[in-house]
Structures are given as C-alpha cells and as structure tokens.
Length: 130
Image 1 (tube, rainbow, N blue to C red):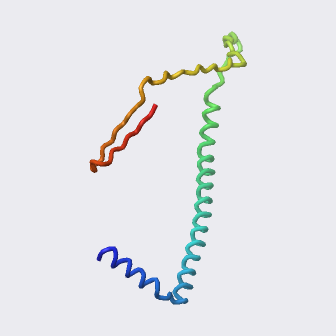
Image 2: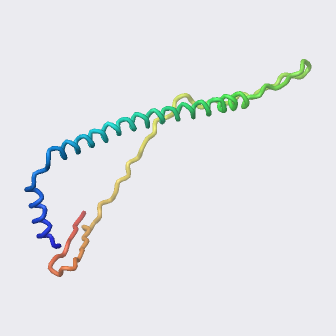
Image 3: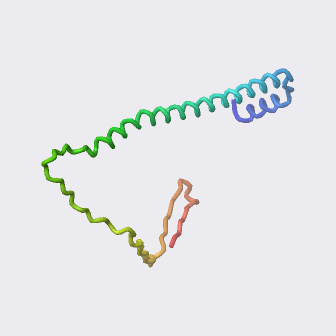
C-alpha cells in the first residue's frame, strides 16, 4: 500500500457512522480508567507518607543514641583534680560581605564564520557570529 491508498481508506472510514452503543461503551471504559488512576494516585501518596514516617521512626532512636553517646560522662573520684577544658576562640559573629569581581571578556577581533556544506551542492549554510 502506498500513501494515496491509505488516505483513501481513511476517507472511507471517516464516512462510516460509528454506532452509538460503541461510543457509549468507549466513554464508560475511559471514565473507569480515569477513576482508577485517581485511586492509585491516592494510594501512592498514602504509601509514600507511611514510608517517610517509618523511616523517621527507625532513624530517630539511632540519632538519639548517638547524641547521648558522643559526650560520655567522665567518672570522677572525690580526690581527683578537676578537669580543665581549654577555652576555644569563637569565630567572629558577622562574616564580611563577599565581594565579587567581574571578569571582562575581551571582544574577539574577527567575527566567527562557520560554513556547513550539505549534500546538495546548491545549499550552503553560513553561521556568522561576533
């Protein structure tokens, strides 16, 4: 079949009337599919929220254990001297503003010329830029 025969076949199909019961059946099926997608979308969001809550419940006790375990309490005896902690110097409260320097790009002295030759000898594409 060539393209003209296919076009003629489509014209013949266009002229035939579609039965009303077929249209109603197609519309009902499309409506059912649309409603089904909405249900799946709601179920997907519920599952996503449940996974996030479950992950938070699993990770939360581990972080609480780490925080409590990072600073162990040192056992002190009554006759032991107190532990001296050196004072750390604090960084300045306000950071200096960031100064950005603009870089000037020097203009090219010659324009850019790109020549693209096609299989047709009469067609040549020229791209000119500055």
